[in-house]
Image: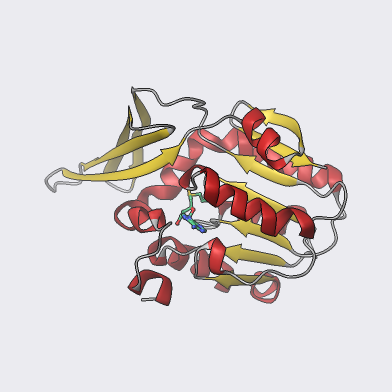
Length: 246
Ligand SMILES: C[S@@+](CC[C@H](N)C(=O)[O-])C[C@H]1O[C@@H](n2cnc3c(N)ncnc32)[C@H](O)[C@@H]1O
């Protein structure tokens, strides 16, 4: 257990990933277009100097995308959830090149030491875990470190205002003899906050079905609102992702 997990912090929604970390890579298929556009745009901007900071690296999707698109750049990966980070660590350890280029921090972003300059920032699927004050604190730390024109890639849930919804995100996904499905449902909470429930059902293979439910929280805002609060310009990549730059 890291220090970050032993002591409750204000922003500790990373703890809500514990129960569902093993399924996380299955849910990423719904976001394949924003990953593809991210790779394309990052490649277009190459070469990018300086370390690339990846906030909330999860199981490594964005770290791999950065490493494969920018073959020599140093990557700073920040992932405070032990279960998510275990997958990330495993992937990094499999590859000699990644072991040399990727530094993994286990604290939440506000507690991670940052280098003087950053070549780019990637924040995919994470900014909604921060309220406005936490985001403002983050921008005060990050923006002075970005060279003029250096990009910040962001991906949000495509929900600008709290709303109730229910959506089947994963259906009939087969791994060996077991089949996986996931239903996500959202409920509007106070202010800009949403409560998002994931219900995973795993069945088949002769065993009884297994249901795992998990709740997470997400502050809703749009990419345009993000551009306004950072003072950066926005280039939209997909409905849920974009690039911010000065
Ligand atoms: C939806 S996942 C996104 C993972 C990855 N970026 C991707 O796109 O596949 C969000 C991640 O942000 C992490 N996270 C939550 N709070 C955080 C914080 N305060 N600092 C850094 N990461 C955080 C969670 O642990 C989780 O792994």
